[in-house]
Amino acid sequence: MLAGSQLWQGVQVLFTLLFLLLIVIYPRYLFYRMVADMEEVAERLEGYARQAAELAAGMCSVKGEAAVDKVQRTFDFFLIPPVDLDPYGILRKLEHLLDGAEERFRSVAEELAPSCEEHVKANLVGVLKGGTGINLLAKLVRHHVELVKKTKNLQLAMVFQMNLPIIKRIGQAQMDGIRAISKGEPIGDGIGPLVAAKLMRNRAREIARDVVYSEEVLEGRRLLVVKAKGPGACLGKLGDAVRRLCEWYSVGRIVTVDASLKMEGEPTGRVSEGMGAAIGDPGPEKAKIEECAVSLGIPLEAVAVKMSIEEAISPMLGEIRDASGAALQAVREAVRRTPPERWTLVVGVGNTCGIGNSSSEVEEVKVVERKEEKEEPTPLDRFVRWLVERQKRAEREMEEKKAKGERGTT
Image (cartoon, rainbow, N blue to C red; front, top):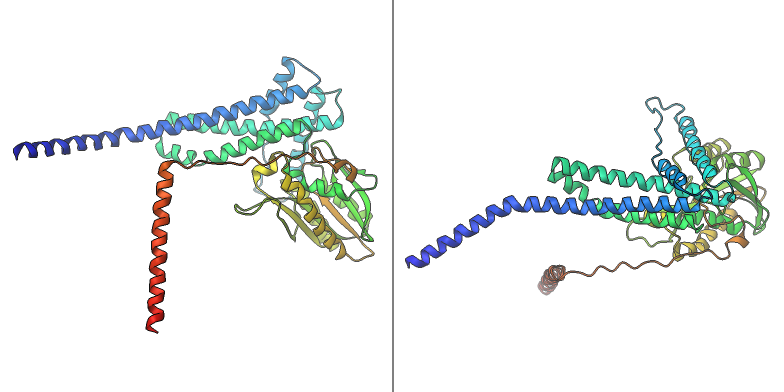
């Protein structure tokens, strides 16, 4: 009896010691495991930044260390937002800074690729912009990793680690988009220019910086189609183009076509219609379109093709390209609502990389197949799911029995 009591006391002491050790050791283990995960993501993003720099240097006609050094310094480019304490005139300030940044990237592309064609230079600008974004993301992740290691703050590590899956997905999608732009292939955000190009059968003329338009006839109605100048990676000054066309023509309706962020669970490529300017610029171009529509009393409609943020910045998927048919149908319906004597202005918003300026140039658009993500559940996951399903089944059976009992009493 005494031996059994001593054995039980020994077991209790052992479990107490193990419990105390877990209290001390497990938080440290958890902390260093989180730091290791964050280090992995930081190194991956830094690798993406290096790959983007190599892609940009490979597109240059100027070779050597000077080109690589110029690309690396361009990736550290930053833009300081204007003062917004007094909101009057902030859009003009913002536009001035954005135009200056655009000219800076263009000058770098001209310096590194002076003998290349214009669309190649435009693609190089797109790669430089994408590389700047991914380089900034890598530096932010590295900053948080070093801050967590310096402070040894478990709560800070947990907060940051919760965002790692999203950061990894965006970083991978951004890198895929940079690769596509370097090859001159379309990305998901190009659905707006693709819809516009399918409507353009006549000669396209330049009307604003990096923007072309053409006069078309659709089902007996007059149509003005506007898009960024392709096939280079351009966005264009669409607001200036819309304002000029509204001054030159009797426009009865403005229809903007653009990619739109979908909710999780919504199918990619779903087309929705609404009111307003579907354009995701920082503000100046959207404001010009809205001011033009308001001052002239022109209805402003939007056609949105739904996709995730990763799909928008990655190579164009087949279901996004196929959604152009439904988007064109929405445009036709908007044209029918316009008075016959007036013009309908259709604006294809988005990055026009790999998308030309006529319907003949977009008969064959290169797309990629969706990569299916299959996550194999662990045995523990399967066991927990079985427990949950078993509990739900038992609850349903209880509800059915209760319902039968209530029907029997009545």
